[in-house]
Length: 267
Image 1 (cartoon, rainbow, N blue to C red):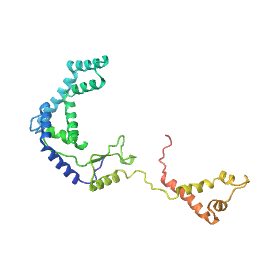
Image 2: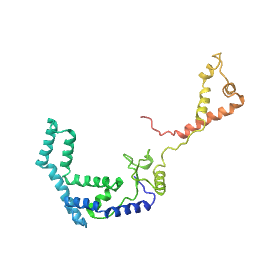
Image 3: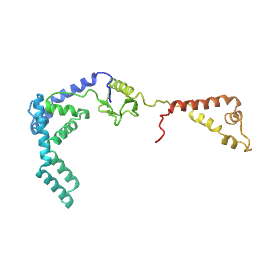
Image 4: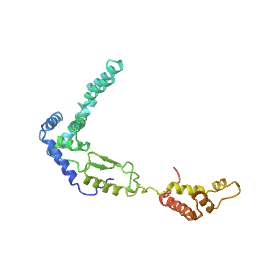
């Protein structure tokens, strides 16, 4: 559902520069090396499609094997029994289960990527780039430091009633302009309204002209005050009658324009 307004420029370049700098950092390369060794990935990465496909099948197969193995399930059960008996605390049990599940290749890769992003204080949208670097030894970077969307259960843009935005890093003025363009694009069907001038006063005019209030304003309940009398009583001059009528007409027109009827008849 997300439509990009323009081609990435500064955001992509600075993210690529950042990834290149990270790839040159020995501490980062040490973690990447450990990950590749654990995951049976060559030091140079998976260089072609056949290597990648073969590795992925083994990756999934090994993960499934561990999850379904008797020893893995027995170790999970043992930790649960220790927790239940009070031998270990909930925190210790969670930590042991976390370490145990870390041995599953799928979990290991996901957790290692998150660890690297946290350790080196990277924007969260770098996760895919870090993952692909571990697998392919290829430097890639996010195109933008924000995303607009995703939209859940939305079939067409005219159904959009809100614009979800996620920002991953402090935006430059140019990036903010790009974000504004995307908001304008996807949010063109959102309601539009501005502050109303003298709304309280105009609503008061409308309230004064209600029959019940016009009657209560008089000592004689059967007598209904004229608009001129209300203007003189409330505003100090009969010459203010036109301003009252104009305000009330403006409210009626504004309601019709602003509160468009959707055609729905049931909640």
